[in-house]
Length: 77
Image (tube, rainbow, N blue to C red; front, side):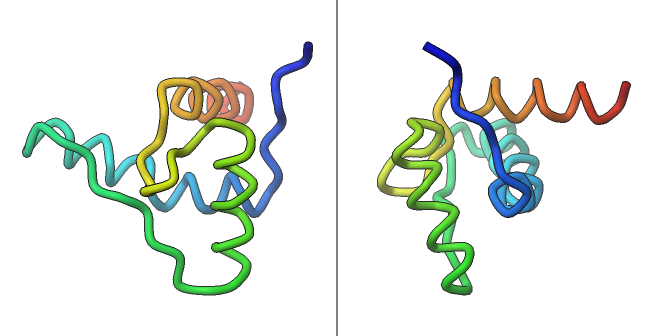
């Protein structure tokens, strides 16, 4: 089974929140949840939840962080 892909909107949402959550985890020891400001962000969060990249309360899963890192590494190359 293929791994789910990230759309542009989902990648934009992750670009905004993954660094913040990583920093928060390093400083406080726990994650903060993602909040959606627009309907588009809410749809992206729902899709990421269905793919297993984010939990229902807005925390990125290990699979979500790995998918984000893979995508970023491809963009850098």
